[in-house]
Image (cartoon, rainbow, N blue to C red):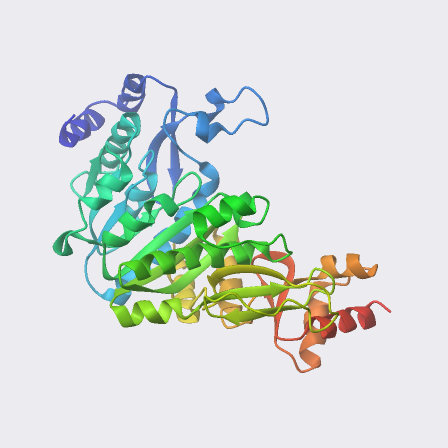
Length: 420
């Protein structure tokens, strides 16, 4: 149906949304998020048991818990557009109800073409309606085909996008090659991974198969998840002679998310590959260290307690956030009507503060449990570590965690003294 005709329906009757939702053939409701109003599946209609996951059962995918994810995407895209200082083209190959794409068109200044797609014809129909409902149907083009086929249509140099957002139900890996080919040099790629069980070491074989790296079930597994995701991206990009630079990443709820710019050229691709490596971890004494390079490290014995070292990787050992980009995101959040503003700002602030911190983090309760010690306040621990002359900062990955350049033996000693 022609989007302009949809707009005329909306203007003609106050009951237009209700009448149109009936034509979808499934229960819907109108919700407000950010600055837009959209029609989405009524998730309550698809849940019979408490444990059931409604978004996967609905005829069109919509996940209300990903609102924070979409808020951050709006901020990141706006910061990126202002850095470019020109109009940007946007692509969302897995759009669902079209909410994210419509928000980009409405809330981000300097966005020109927004191309959204979903293989589900009901989703494409709903996304078309939502674009018209928010009067951006002239800038939001909706397609209905396989995501990789859709992305491949924009692989030619003059057709590529400035920004591609891959937010699947599960792993983004099946779409990485096509997404990279659809990005201009200097473009921004956003990736979400919700398959946390493989990335956090519950299913190591699945992680190795999908992401090309071995995970570990450590207290800092969520950081490992981000680094495994970015590592997979870096190696896939290198095949196309593309280098990557991570501007922002975070872990929250049931997923990890990374924003990285890409740049064409063999030299920058080589530079990215040089930031790959391994993390060696001792489950006996909490010692951990990094080993740069794709070749597997030869060290197998912990230098502190002589126990066997476990290895995670290959994965990304480079930066997973840029302080300046975080600062610009914070500034961009000011004055916006965001439902989770307090939580969002706290996360950005934490990511910014730990951007220059060492790789991995310690969790107070994990160490205290191992040493059979009472658990002190995190702030007290961080202050003590700093007084001892080491770097220390809280991490957004874990509310009980902190990053430091102090050795595990020093951390254990400090916690022992604090709880004595």
